[in-house]
Length: 176
Image (cartoon, rainbow, N blue to C red):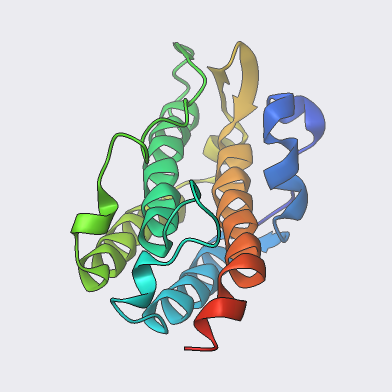
């Protein structure tokens, strides 16, 4: 279903960076195409390469994928709440999940499979939503946030990390 990008009053200001870089279009097609891009990129890495960090203290390849998955899970739950008209205020998503999870202990193939499961669940949720449901809103960070804005956040957040991955990881990984 084609759905326009949300306006700035449809989401918290903190979402702007991600929503701005997301492509506009058919939400299901955008999610599917991005899934293929993410899968191709991470499948191109070997197990040894997946431990690479472009700088001390930065995330490994596995941690980047883990962060994308965790954020998508959180935002999909928020998408569900907003689309159902739940107005319970939801707090800001704290970026503690990677630091408290050891994604590096897991095989990259398992993380890739898990990403496919997470994205499949997101696509199933979005596929079942009507235009009316996508226009419904919830409350995140004390701001009205539409369900559609959350889909665009998911897309933009992943696109942001794909850009960083291609810029800071691929130059090294392509040399190996």
